[in-house]
Amino acid sequence: DELMQYSVVGFPRIGAQRELKFTVEKYFRNEINTDELLQTTAKLRAKQWKLQQTAGAAFIPSNDFSLYDGMLDTSFMLNAIPQRYLDLNLDDTAAYFAMARGYQGHHGDVKATAMKKWFNTNYHYMVPELDDTTDILLRSDHFLDGFHQAQSLGINTKPVIIGPFTFLKLASFTGHKNIADYVDSIKTAYNNILKSCATNKVDWLQIDEPYLVMDLTANDIALFTDMYQFILEKKETVKVLLQTYFGDVRDCCRQLYNLQFDGIGLDFLEGKETTRLTTNFPDDKILFAGLINGKNIWRCNYNSILSQLKNLKAHCHKIILSTSCSLLHVPYTVTNEPQLAPEITRCFSFAYEKLEELREICRLTELPDYQNDPAYQQNCQLFQSTELRIDKTVQEKVAALTNNDFTRAMPRKKRQALQRKILNLPLLPTT
Image (cartoon, rainbow, N blue to C red; front, side):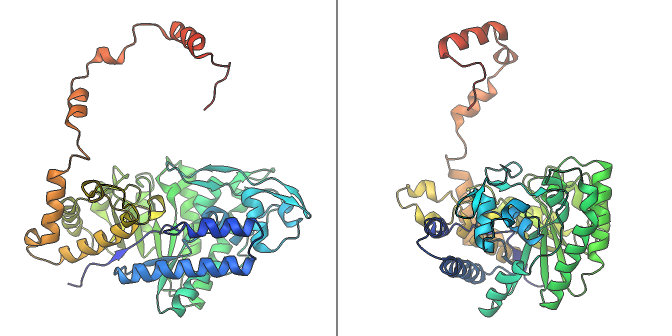
């Protein structure tokens, strides 16, 4: 039985010392040119891949890095660039930032595209804008830039892209056309993405489809199935990992399992039904089990994860341990917080520490008596002794609540009048 491997869905990109932020701001102020901007980002990416390689990650993501936003990268990759930005006649990087934050200068005056919250996170994405003249196609192979750069450093990565279903479901349609009008062209574009991956000898391609965890209609499921039946016919030598996060796939689980994916990434943290959905996980696929929380900053409970893995092994042929979503949502490392007390930081796990946890759990799965392992014991101790997670006073107060605590004595109309008077609120107060 070979050693359990682990995978990372995505990694933070701002830089452990916020290098990307400062570099991009210099570029905005015209203190550096495009080449210098791209050189700095190349260095940042290299540092992160080496770090993950050293930490023993078997599936290291590339193209999870972005100068601004992954959805905007996808719009660019798929040629979904509204005409007003093309009319500025800027180079690609400048046009990209014009879509991200608007442009006012010698070339013209345009506003940025709309921005929305990325599912249930505090991350925001730029909404793809599709009008009646949009011609969706694979505009360039830039999504493989990271793959090639990592390869030159002797690191094999899995390129990550946002899938066609999520892209179209989150897009805004500004003309008369709707989703159905773009399906054929987007299927061809993703076919070409797979062809390009095969030509460039990519082992694994990760396609993120977080929209699958939303409430899906029968039409949604039919659309998703139709797209991927077509796209996956052309995968040739490339293995495809379909990655989901921020919930479970209860609405489309059966269809998902029947498609020609090689791996399926499921979120066991926010996916309430995920454990139940894996009882009939297909034998011909690898389960990328998202058991380490990619969103929060707490250390994980080894005992809980090891017993979950044991249960999963009963009906899943092959398992890769993974994060529940991209680590984009957490800081880089606890070592950057020297001002915090050790009894606090020992409960924290940021991106670097999560890599250690993933590696440690993979190692523990191989031990017949992991209960005697010092790392395991230390982790157990943390969960028995910490006061950071459990506040007895709060628990007692919550337990003492009765139905009366949820009923207000004064009717809402009266409360509203009082609030307006005391707080001096305008007619439509907004935060």
